[in-house]
Image 1: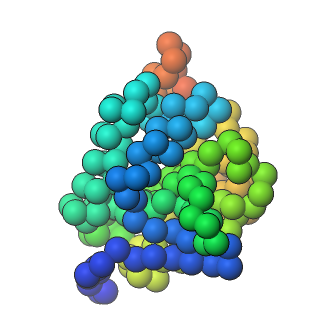
Image 2: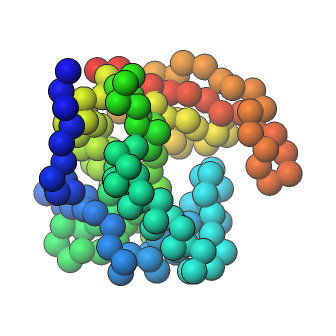
Length: 180
């Protein structure tokens, strides 16, 4: 069994992306994303004020401090432009699994950013966090996310019917998983 011991936050990089730890200066960008109706349409978190968004920043920091997950700010490697976020939560060290999540500011949709970022995240999770299983819970109507997960090698395992109440109605969640 591999013991995960992180002395400093891991920075992941590719030719055009850098995935780094969140900074206080990211608050406005996180608010921009998690208050945007297109981003939150299929996302479980939303904020109406910048002040309320501080809870999300605390969530990111708490995941790291409590070793229950890791989330990265996804940025341009050249100029640092903030694109979105991705990472893991509900990390079970006993069961070697975690839930993956991600979102991207709409201005950067269709540029292959998450297609480039997600393999880096999954590789880090499998190789450095000692994950055997990465799970993705997706609203059944979110065809783009399901397609993206499929391209990454995630397999649809089932549908939880009417398992959450959102925007005045019950919704189905699908579970997709990648096994190492």
